[in-house]
Amino acid sequence: MTINLLIFVCLLGGLLFVLVCWRQILRGRVPTALLGGACAVVLILAAAAVGLLAADLRSYQRLSFEQSAADVRFSRIGERAYNAVLTYPNGSTETFLLRGDEWQIDARLIKWHALANVLGFDTAYRLERISGRYTRIEDERRAARTVYPLSPPQRLDLWYLAREYKQWVPWLDALYGSAAYVPMADGAAYEVKVSQSGLTARPLNQAARSAVGGWQ
Image 1: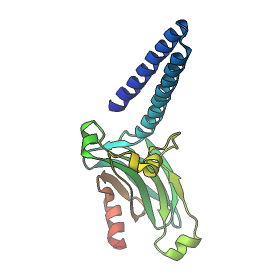
Image 2 (image 1 turned 180 degrees about the vertical axis):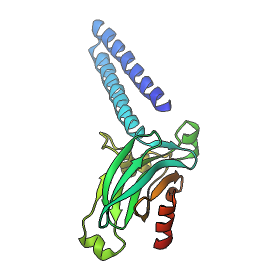
Image 3 (image 1 turned 30 degrees about the vertical axis):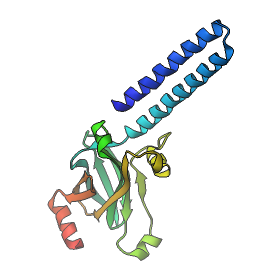
Image 4 (image 1 turned 90 degrees about the vertical axis):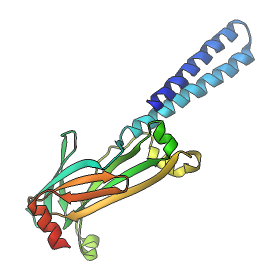
């Protein structure tokens, strides 16, 4: 709501300056018209930039308490190879071929200061990638790697801009990545939970509990 209001204000201001510019042209006041036109262009470009940032921010999920980010279920299809079915809270699914002994999921988190929270900016997260992982470093270096993105690329990356120009975004409290990894096993199911401290992967069935128990 706050971002939409900002876009609306910028567009409205731009249109008002366009009208002012047109009136000044009719009156023959070219310098004033040029100034009004420049202001209109700045405000319209600002609205477009805020719109692109808003589109990227909407790719993140609002986070105010620990919540479920996804379920993952595994079926073994070969030696150290598994099909992983990722189910999101909205019911949509994706399937990935993962190789290794473990699986890992990564996310980005954006945390705002209290004032931004009051304006409606909750801590937000976005799942970034899922990958296979090997227990032994030697295997990690030599064996086949499997990694997949979980979010499409954005035209304007809020994460990158906030990291590069953090001094200009005083209401931003922290940017950080989080990852969780646990063993893969035939029939194992896990729930990925996310909180302000990051990601956790918790066993949902006995196959997963046995895998985690043997892994520890």
